[in-house]
Length: 377
Ligand code: UDP
Image (tube, rainbow, N blue to C red; front, side, top):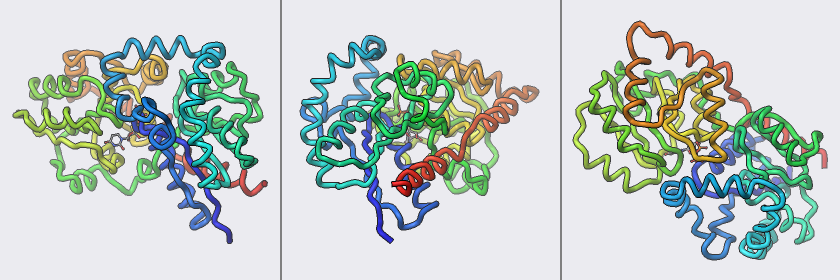
């Protein structure tokens, strides 16, 4: 049996693009063992010219200090005229080296889990003479940017009906669209990992209500202030703070004296265990984290969102009845206190609704779609 090569175009701008690619990779290995050799290519890092090759490193400072500019940029560029204006710059910065990398990799299928690499990736692939299929896996739930949608691709897989409508608005033909769900790692749905087992494994108190505080792969947002406010309120909980790749935040958290049990982590590779161990998650409105939390049946307290692609996620969480947005540490503490009150059944309601909304099979379904696409050829 020939092993076929699948190349994912992604980048560590945040954690979601890699998580999606890894979830599909694991699902392919589960469903079709030894049939696929998968490579993840961080296109900004490996193919782009300066300064775009620093995009993964500058994503956190940029989105933190210039959040408003990010939102403005998202809206200004979210139409075909504006993207046509910036495309030549992106093209010159990325495509020549990407072509060389594609030639070297000789993939049988290319999948982009990053909006910037859809049109560029497709063009580069065809320019080297390859006719292999190109698939887009959209990782934004609602306000997906028009960069995601190029009608030339063979298939475009979207996570929600909302993203499907956006895709159509940007000219994606219906027959190339599939609504499948956000691919999340299979372990998030593994009900054999009980809350107690996860707490035991992670060295947490087995009985204490556990609140998980995260800010995407980069540890974005005012996580330190939120942790301090929760600590000062002396709620009867244990707090887990996952700082992701944000080293400064981690150091600051480690240098602080806490009054409640606080567990501080950097970038973890076992997020399913941390979520399974928890009762509530506090997070920015990252699509990956939201869908993982739904799969684990976790009520979601949103602490913020990146204007632009994450705005619609807030509406989704609030309107679906799985959580609320509170933008200040004080409001977050007030909400937590309310949710944790002994006679309040809101957490149970949110948790049940989260499980209803989850699409834990999305990664497996996408693996099947990719496999069938290759078999058809
Ligand atoms: N993540 C992780 N380890 C960490 C922090 C985050 O694996 O220490 C993962 C998280 O589980 C999710 C992704 O990073 O899959 C974050 O994606 P999301 O879309 O929520 O936000 P982004 O970081 O892309 O802005």
